[in-house]
Length: 262
Ligand code: SAM
Image (cartoon, rainbow, N blue to C red; front, side, top):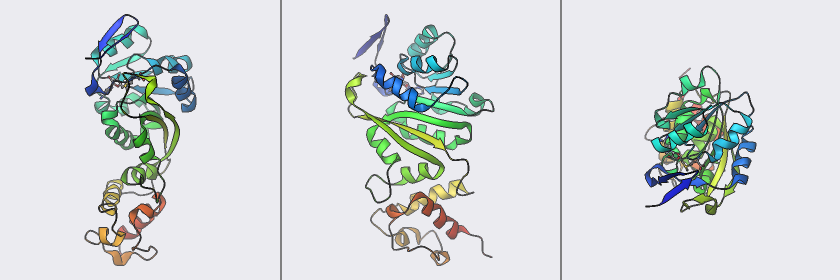
């Protein structure tokens, strides 16, 4: 079992909690600088661990909230940063409405990789409470989030996120700046929810994106014909494949397909 020690606190690393701790201060500084946070912002950090990122955030904004699932680490953070609001618990169960308290949250974190996608979708579903997200994740997921049409990385995740948010790949982080060393490289991504939604029925739109990509090599027409009345479409070539459509084209096509009859 791997053990990690920091300031006389030793813990057994819990792989099932995605624990890979950052050891390079240049990286934590860069993440915080590129997040653009200021002293008056309402900040939430996911998974502070031993506080590598926490320390840098606190230099800019001394009071904020962190949420950590590991009890030993939550109490370490409580002792190390007495001013912070430390929640011991699962981010996926956190009530973002009450954490935001009528403001918008800036979310930061070197997030646990075993739940990257659930975290991204939870933030997406609560995006009216979010001003920005600066998150470190697996490099491969960062590439999929920020992918452009026509590339092999472009798919459901890119279209869903980019339809509702501006998503920016910031920089790559190699394995060797973590303890223990993860199996894959990482990258930092910045996500900022858009002011307006391209569609009203978001649930329906998200289902539509999944249907359009159901069989990647097939045309839009083949993937959509069972679920939608394609005769409603006037301005799209349905022989195209889903992977060639921009997020804006996805919402335009969805609107054409779901327009109430006049
Ligand atoms: N921020 C620290 C750093 O950069 O060194 C730790 C990052 S480590 C990749 C992920 C952290 O998230 C760990 O401290 C882990 O215990 C915590 N964690 C895992 N699952 C969590 C969950 N569901 N909710 C909140 N924190 C979680």
